Image 1 (cartoon, rainbow, N blue to C red):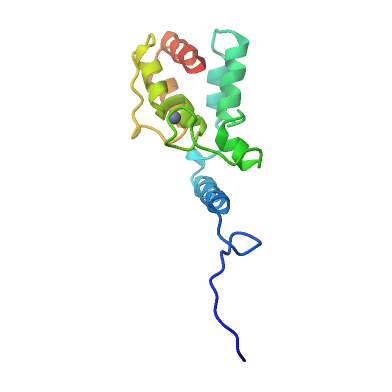
Image 2: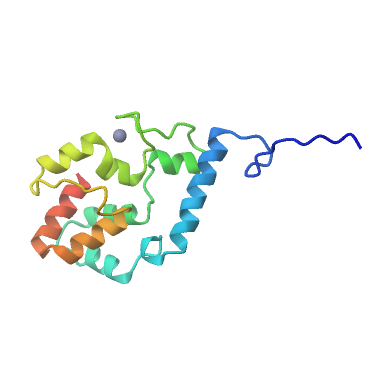
Length: 156
Ligand SMILES: [Zn+2]
């Protein structure tokens, strides 16, 4: 009947691939994968919240940590996901998507700040995949004073 096959990008209403729709697809795919593994997902345990709110430190740092754990800060990744910006690369290193994990741990400038801080900490990319997992490891492996230091360094 004269019909021709054509290639259609299934993940956008227009059927045309764009970097934006490809990125959205990958973000949704990652979120769905995380939802299948509750420990790595956005369902945060009560222990995490308890450990943050019980820290003996300024409320503004606790609120900052709360926002970080909920991925509620205006990172470029979040702004992109909400359609506020089209640029999601880190403005400092220009190499990676500016996610909360990149801002806090993986950007070269963040690594320098961590290492120069009171803990001389070197984030291990194999040690955790999310900021929630990082905090859980801090809670399980460090003393209360070390947790406070980590939280202060985290908020700087
Ligand atoms: Zn960067």
